[in-house]
Length: 411
Image 1 (cartoon, rainbow, N blue to C red):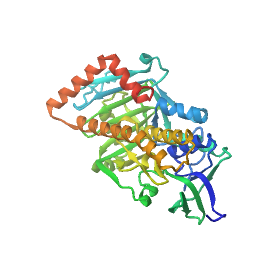
Image 2 (cartoon, helix red, strand yellow):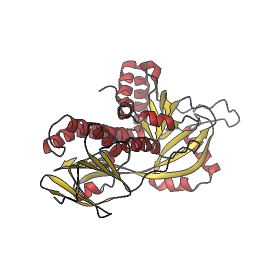
Image 3 (cartoon, helix red, strand yellow):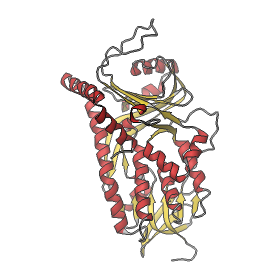
Image 4 (cartoon, rainbow, N blue to C red):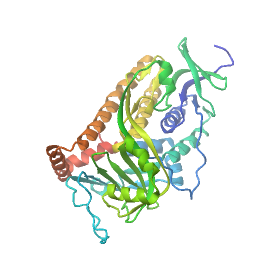
């Protein structure tokens, strides 16, 4: 190997939330890491409006960020705990007397389920955090780690596996080598493509419209989610009293809603929410992104591993996507750190694939099943799901197990 080629234990392609988490975890174990990223976010400005893209961070992910030392940095910027979650089947048409603002309930609601942190003896169920805030906190940690080189702007051009090492070529002409190349470069991963790893893909025919809105009524530190035939609408509480929305719409309707003027959009959004929080007023930009389920046929190849969106994407209706990616990073880092073997050892990488594949696939299929279930409009299906929601809502042990699992504090 050329002496001019700098060698690392691990090269991570992608310094987003998942890739940066992996780099932080391994740097803390003394591993020499290069992390390659083409673009870094601007600095955080305290009085800036919330970013459009947010994540619902589970307790398990929070604990990982605490371990890394990034959680306090996120707190110093902006995080929004939520103490409850209310989910209801809103397939019936919203009914509201526009002259009586006190009556905000939707007459057609039948099935519903409510989760409360106090019932579990927990301070909250999770946190809504802007993706930018998470990434900036992790990058701040990395920039102070002596064993980490953050290479930006730079992007992957090609790689070759030679003599138990991966030789990586970047667009700036630099070459690096490592025992392991980790692809954390998103849904359209170049690492995955160059490695020739095939992916199963399911286009949901939907887009997720995101925006920030000011509700007429207090959000009560509650995450609200209404299931409708066209897809769910989530109102995620932010610390300043506003809500971040994720509105799942048929792909051919999302652009129509994006093009609406604010007044018309507010009316449509109010109807879609069943006026649970009264009138909703959008401020700032709106955006939409396609919803596609993906799952790689393999997580690994010799000296190559995929994590996060590079290996799986799921429907956002339960907000589990980034948490699954954080679990990938934790599993891979733990397996590498606990072994004396080279990080690129096939035995170690097979352990990582076995540790994560079943959980990721099960979660993805569960989200797709919910999408199908709440999309059905046959009366027998609607009746069954409403009965099911109300029944589970009365079964505290079952309900507590569901939410503990989602928080990552139970199996």
